[in-house]
Every structure is written in structure tokens, then in C-alpha cells.
Image (cartoon, rainbow, N blue to C red; front, side, top):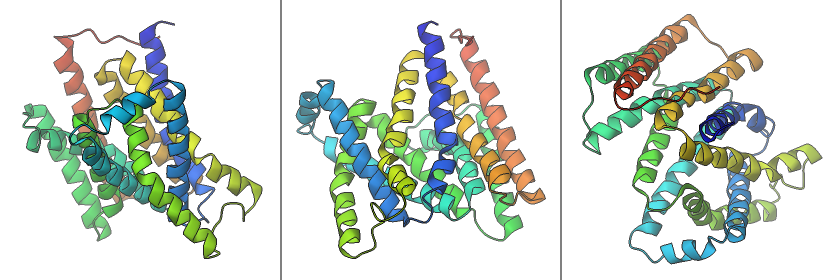
Amino acid sequence: MNREQRGFWYGVGAYASWGVFPLYWKMVADVPVMQVICHRIVWSSLMLAGFVALSGQAGMLRASLGRPGVVTTYAVAAALIAVNWFGFLWAVGSGYIVETSLGYFINPLLSVLLAVFVLGERLRPWQWIAVALAATGVLYIGISHGQVPWISLLLASSFALYALVKKRAPLGSVLGLTLETGILALPAAAWLVWSELSGDAAFLHRAGLTNALLLGAGAVTIAPLLMFASAAQRIPMLWIGLLQYIAPTLQLAIGVLVYREPFTHDRLIGFSLVWTALLVLAIEGVAAHRASAVIPLPE
């Protein structure tokens, strides 16, 4: 298996892991969301700090802290990913997995809009058509259900903004995530201590499985991120763009087939418009890259 093929399967592993996340977080749905997020942050931070230390990158991370704008940039990124994690975990625990899948389906299209209005990039005609189709789908779902799909929009917008901040961030993926979780680690640890003192803590006060799941929150957060980083180094970004639809597809299937969340005719119409938009975007992207690069096909 060559470098590109390994990268492809790393990408599949990353997005498949994110796709089945609802199964994991659903098992700790009885734990307060803030405690789950804080465990996720604290254990992720400790694991990343250990990884950075063992890989000899600690000095590089310390040196970067003195560079102008580094801490501010990653503080913004940390706030955005915290909002995204909170929204996702709350939605999973509250029975809105289908809405989370819609959020991650429309996320690439919001990223396209941010590229236009923030980065000054220009869209080709078919890209505008894709954006219009997705907007129509979201609008249809909102009108048919009598309310804005705010969970989907919160997840999509927070992650699109996070990606925008990371695009301009100066550090690599591992060091950047280490700094982000490090910024969040102190308030997260303080929240867990407060929960313990107030008698509301779940960790070490619940069944063994719950304790293990909370302890493993760091590992299940870091593993797909490392796989994604490995994939991004080995395969074209076009393949990354196509693979990203694995996650929301699995989330949708889990929400409907496993947890029996409603998937009405109106939702099907709205989702179909979004899927059509993504198909248009994918085909347009392949066509645009074909003239300038050969896209390696995985075996």
C-alpha cells in the first residue's frame, strides 16, 4: 500500500469515526453536557501534551507562544470548537442526531461562502448554484417545520468559522490543537472540581462503563484528528472534500435507523436539495481539478 492509499484509508477512518460519534456520546447522555465536554477537553489536553512532549515538539510549542497573535488566534479557535462540541453533544443527548447530520452536510457550503466574503475568493457559476440549492433546502426545512433548524446552523457555522480561523493559524494541526485544548483545560478542570464539590459530579460516582467512557473521551477525540492530519499530508484536498460526507451520512443513518428519530417527507425534500447541492459541488470540483492535476484513485 503506497503513501496515497494509506492516506485515503486514514481519511476514511477519521470521518467514519466522527460519523459514529453519536453512538459513543449517547451512552453518556445522562451525564450533564458541560461535564462531558470538560472531560473531553481535560483528557484530550493531557494526551496531546504527552504526545507533544514525547515527540520532541514541546520547545517548538513554547517558542510559538511568544509570537504575535498566536495565543489570540488559538483562543478564538478554542472558543469556536467548544461551542461546536457543546452543540453537538447537547443535540445527540437530546435526540437531534438528524439535525447534527444536516449541520455537517451544509458546513462545506458555508465554508464556500466564507471563502467568498472573508477571503475574497470568487465562485464559479456551478458553485453558486450549489449554494443556492443548499440554502433552499435549509429554508424549506425551516418553513415546513415552523422553526429555523438552529442546531444545524449552529454546528455548521461554528465549524466553518473554526476552519477559517485554522486556515490562517500559524501552527501545525497537532500543536494547534494542543494549544487550543490547553487554553480550555484550566476552566474545564475548574468546572469538574466545582461539580465534585457540589456533589453533582458523574466521574467515579457512576457505573464503571460511564467512568470508562468519560475517561476515554480524550482518546476518541484525538484519534480521528491524528488520522485526519495523516490523511491531509498524503492525499489531495479534493479527496478530503469528498470523504467528509462520510460523517454526516453515518450520523443520519444512526439517527434514523438506530434511535428512530423522525425523518418526515418534508425533511426528505429539504435534505435532497442539500444532497443535490453537494453533488453539484463535488462534480464541479472534480471537473475543475481534472485539467490541472491527476486525482489518484484509491485501490
